[in-house]
Image (cartoon, rainbow, N blue to C red):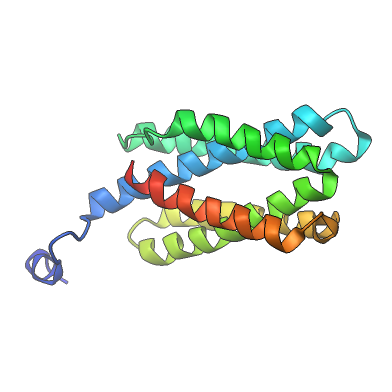
Length: 185
C-alpha cells in the first residue's frame, strides 16, 4: 500500500503508526512496572515463606521485561505513562492485599492479571505484524512468559482462593482499565 493509499484509508481519530507504537511501548512499560509492584507487594507479605519461590521467580522475569521496555522507550523516544505513580501504589497494594488473603489469593491475582496480559499482548502482536518484527518477537516472548506465570498460578492453587471467581473477575476488570488508561495517559 502506498503512502497516499494509507492516508486515504485513515479516518479522523485513527492513530498514526508512530502514535500507535508510542502507545504500545507506554502501556507495556506501565504494565510490566505494575506487575513488578504486584510481586513486590506479595513478597512483602509472603517473601519469607519457603513456598514463595514461584513468586520470586515470576518477579525476576517481570523485572527483565521491565528493563527491556525501559530501554525501548528511551530508544524510541516514547513517553511513559503519567499514571506511573498510581501504578506504583495500586500495584503494591493489590499484591500485598491478595497475599494477606493467603498464598492462593496471591496466585489468583497472578492468574487474573496474566490472563488479561496474554490477550493484550496477542492483540499487540497482531497489530504490529511484520511492521516491527523485533518488537513483535519481544512481545511474543514475553507473552509466553506471562502464560507460564498464569499456568504456574493455577498449578499453585489459585482456584482454591477465597471467592476465586469474584476476586479474579475484579482483578481482570481492573487490569483492563489500567491498560486502557495507560495507553492514553
